[in-house]
Length: 375
Image (cartoon, rainbow, N blue to C red; front, side, top):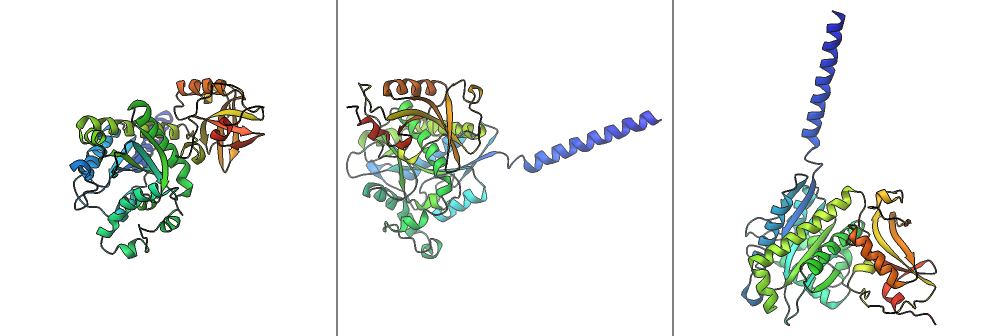
């Protein structure tokens, strides 16, 4: 009798434990998913640009729906759309949709236009306009607020035509800047290396739609509809499929990095448009005070620098900077050697890694290091 009572008690505890587990998963399973908000630019009465007769709002929507279709194949990802049809959605509301969803990422898709035959892809993160060109792009995208009712109060007097207004909208997004740049660089890498599109790089500008969201956020300009060849490509089914699959792939790479608690350490001074690190070095005669490392990752977590944490790479070092641990592979004064180490890191899966230069232990722009030769 005592044995039977004990068996019943154990069974009862097991049932309670299992029930608790099921209830916990039901309650929290949804929130544990990685939430991506996809924003198709423009829509409804706002057609966007009409370069070569193509409609930006239609192309952006087609690409976003294809991105979502690809991401939804992953059961651990939840996709939220700011619009799935040809409707007008306030910029203010797009950000609120992302915030209500407690999104992990916000990705806004657009197409560019110019009076010339300019072409190429560029991905923006929120920031101060570095030049007039970036300001003009942001101004065009922000101008949609004039179509909205009561825009003066909703945006606290923000003026798309005023460069000074961008300064006020930077607050609140600074903590997500590193992650935003990382995602933007993954997208640009795919466009450049896989699709062979002209790389107009990762840039900063004051896009109000990015300001409204409180999570890592990027705005993708797929290319120029005003360019004859590029416009036709983006208006085609092939072009839209190509672009959407590569954006989805970049998002999946970002998620994988987050899952591993190792975020790509994309830095503003290394990845944004002013970088001139593409110069080819045919001589190893770099100033002996200069050393090179390959930055493979950055994380808020303090990882042990053992090969098993870094896909088998040895000689990994770390430095804590501004609350993040930066992880570097290799150390050499020979630029040709560091290029080989960079290729090795990429072959291991660190596709967004990059070379960093130091002079007497202090980080300097890579372009400056490459212009310095030993006497």
